[in-house]
Image 1 (tube, rainbow, N blue to C red):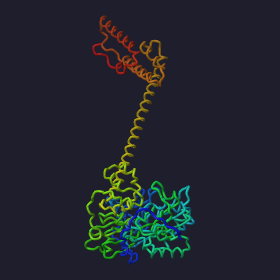
Image 2: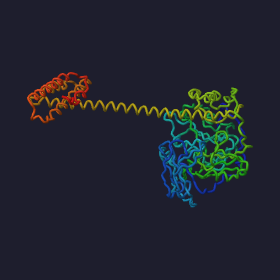
Image 3: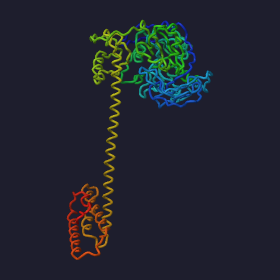
Image 4: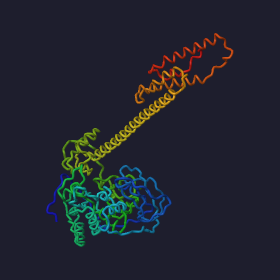
Length: 578
């Protein structure tokens, strides 16, 4: 057993309200009429759909393939027919739709072929791939792909593996019931994580207000002959936060700029360990999860619900009371209000709370901040929420970053104790979203600028290459003229050798070569045109024509040295009176 427990700064002790939902064992929610399975249920890339309307699927079949390493697959919760792959309202504060697979169950519950595996007989990398393809993610609420966390830092060995059974949010009891009823499977899943990380010590932290869960986990550890340590930690919100629980159990502070593995610690939720064991030992991907249904309902209870089940059908199992006015997904501290009960249960749905004006009275009007400092006293990350509030309200987002706004885990402790009833967390979420939005705009602008500069550089390069080709062509034509018959006209013989002698890389030479080429083209064009109606000319007319040609030749000869003259002046047509 641990000889010493540590403490973290801040935290609050709200009413737990957990007792009503632990009076009955975990129930199996009935099969819904339709399943709406979102393809994006974890952090990272959105899985690519592998099915289409009209296709028959089996229970556990992959319907969304993982998009790269930082992603996790999605599976059919039951056998049936795919009705559509379309946008459907999501279980998200925004209420925006997300791409979902709509399945009509056939009632046969026909499984895919399942192959139990022993993780000890496989390479660690292969085990991680299997967990990714089974859709195993953090079920404590963060839904981070678990296989990505099962890679230890290259330079720091994992000293402690922490299994999180604290479940500090009020109302929520899904992990409590899971530990009471399925403790051995959690312990076996913990052993898988320990072996993959080569952890030297395993610590299972459970808040001391769950004595039945503590006893069940200790009994399972003894039965399986494991050396895991089950530790009862003091009840204080947010002791279930990963960094807070690591601090309590190991005394290590995890900075915001580092991963816990860089300090030799990794943390997983008890439900994540359970699903990892089921995925490997039974070949079952993550197609359901335990959800606490509580609050203003007649029958609060924990239910095992298929992913994709509309929340409306889950809520009906608890028989909401007549004065129920709203529903929350998650706990009252970090959860959010569900705008549409058509939204489905997803991997992040750990609790649904029915609210009423009595249970959750309307928030009092917001009043000015009095700088009492109560929010700073309870902040578990030792931030200054009142300063962050002022800067977020003034839209001074640069200052919010200087005060480490991204260290905020949005636990809600500051809002809970604020005597002015300021929704501080909402201000912080607003500031974060604005910073992310502006960063995306900046990245897009930088990318557009880079594309513009590359385009200009390409255009300049192509123009230089074209000029060089023209100069080489002019030089080649000049070389041909050098070997022409002796009666070559004086103008071309005086101009072309000079152009040939110039270096093609010199800008002045290129310009002169262009002039010489234009003059040569004009001379050739004139030579090709035969005079008309010259048979009956008088002697005076012939003498006048000869004088005009002499003047033209003299003009061309005198214009040859003018390197700065544009070619157009030498190729324009003669005046019609000549």
